[in-house]
Image: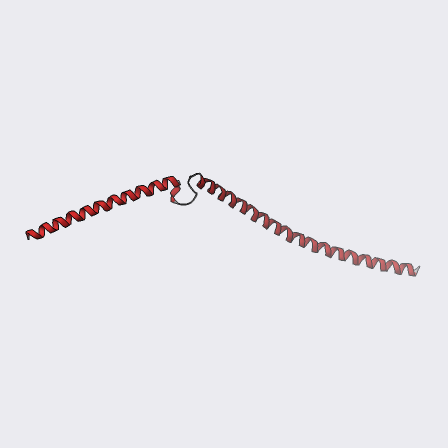
Length: 118
């Protein structure tokens, strides 16, 4: 009877050790699970940001391909409008150069004439 009691006590101690080890393993697994959960959440957030960026870039690309205004630059002018504006600006600049050249020629003639009268 003493021997059976001793064996039962040993079995009880072994069972307590197994329970303690199991509890420790459970806590460790819960910690690992929490870390993995945080990592997964961070990856999901990064994925969502990347999807939003892809959507924005795709929209910008489609708009530019269609000749529509891009979300950035030149105050919303379309590419054809920008080309037309640049052409108009160049013609205006050419006219101003011609006008200035004519003015210089006129003033040079006046200066030449006034030198003769002095």
